Length: 231
Image (cartoon, rainbow, N blue to C red; front, side, top):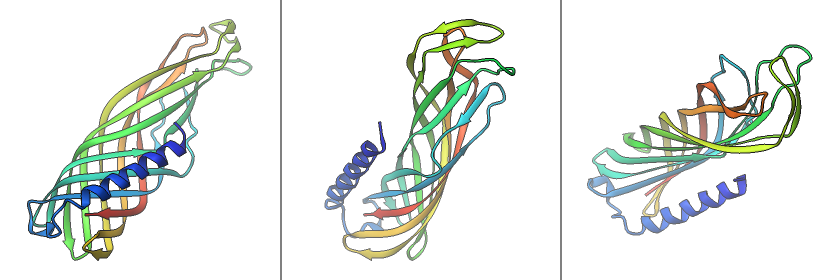
């Protein structure tokens, strides 16, 4: 799934949010009414390093991230469900190798999806803070090219292959924002978010051609800077 598909998904979410907003009471601040916040922005991330094999983070320095909070307002608080998506993480991995060895290569793409419980609190007019905790579902697709391997544990040819995997790990995050435009149509503002996501293990192919993953589960830490629409 390329960036274009993620943009289509984001646009669909915006349209759905706008339609839902027409059914929400304009006096949501009084409490008991549905409130929706959708945020979209630029994301930078870093991952923990593997203690075992040779794993390289090939993710672009800037990604696109989007998240939403759908909940019920109680005075200054909104309590509900959090969801988030982003453009994928990319990795390459090889078994450990000595000088002169040719070892198996694996390239992988990880699509993270966040689901959890979220809460937002109004700090003062226009300013808010939010937090969420739940699961990061990581959907992984891996490919490995056909190669001639020359290593201490195997010498020979292996065919090209591909495989998929998925995992569920703890995810959590927090954000602060400020609404600089407020009207009966909703609120538009800026936000900064910090999130930690479990992305599972990184796919790796053995020199003999077997498919699997390296032993250690990794985590991704991401900063997102963007705009948020609330209604």
